[in-house]
Image (tube, rainbow, N blue to C red):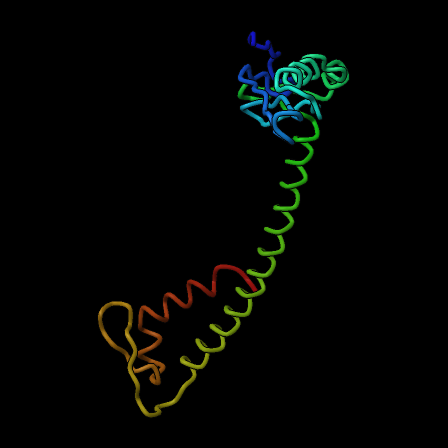
Length: 174
């Protein structure tokens, strides 16, 4: 069989195009379809032919005919990589980007709520340390390799933990 000539892909302009054969009932029934090896676009199928050659020739003719080629041109754009991009693909990408933005905005709003709750709790805990009286002592790391008894307001007020907490609480109102 002589080699069948196939036009480049209508969508991405790839020259590597092949014809896939499907054996329905050997040796009497074959289907064939031309397919781009880059973007996986496919042409109309050639169905129920008695030989592979006839099915492949019809599939090639359908691929090469391109009745919608001129109709597709206004809806095709050249991307930054030099390949054609369909307008519907751009619309799909835009819609996916809008959906992702909405998801991120919702996640951001949830995080701000959690941040507000955490700052509120930190503020209450900070206030408790500053206002507490002498109680049973317990120690926690002070962030500088030492320990402080957190029930003592004076020691807490002079500690790095106090300074860190003050810095966090001063970074905006919640």
